[in-house]
Length: 293
Image 1 (cartoon, rainbow, N blue to C red):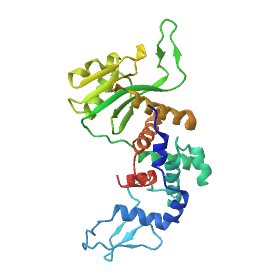
Image 2 (tube, rainbow, N blue to C red):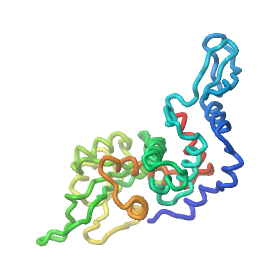
Image 3 (cartoon, rainbow, N blue to C red):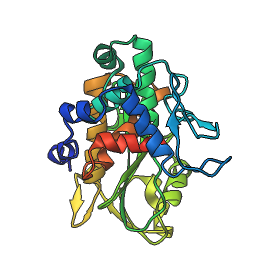
Image 4 (cartoon, rainbow, N blue to C red):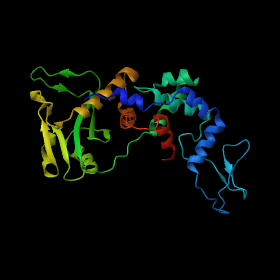
């Protein structure tokens, strides 16, 4: 099952005109961050809630002299780049179907490649996953991302040695979780499965031996991919396969090559967008909401 691109685009109804109107300059961006982070903040010295902007500084002060810096402990800390450029970069991310490479940020923002690369990865930091344990019906599968695969001469199996394994858990009618793993051994994958899926839930997998022990904790269903069986009633991993296509298309069409060191950041980005596909809130604002996490 491929990702419904129509749904994905439907979550992005926030135009450049909307952005220009809402965030015309740095001051508005700073006020936005302050209001989000310190909306209910009480001065620890005088217990007042009223703060004013300090002239010439990116901080706000109470009448008693106590100051707060809304950019501290955020991705903007120690950055000399205009806040509006940061916000525009987040807007570009929200409008892209397959991600934004550093070279594109460099062209759009008018900054150096080094600055664009840093901004891109700081924005991806906002998209880190945080999936909690829950009950339901889940699909489990792994895939390999990286260099070109070769086939063994003696048997019709793919050789993943030069590829990076990524393990995924998708909850039906819910979110997907994906993580770069060192290997696809039972105990490696099991650590994530036990953490995310509540005992007694239903899980759908392929027939790989690594999944054999799932019957001890879960209602375990399998499809036999080696016999070209992909769907049997409600038993399938096609939704998760659709996410793998979404991930690989983004890497292949936008970034071409991603190193193992940074692959998790790109996986987190694709998971964030996939999970936001049915949101009624524009993706740009979903990214802004992560500033307070």
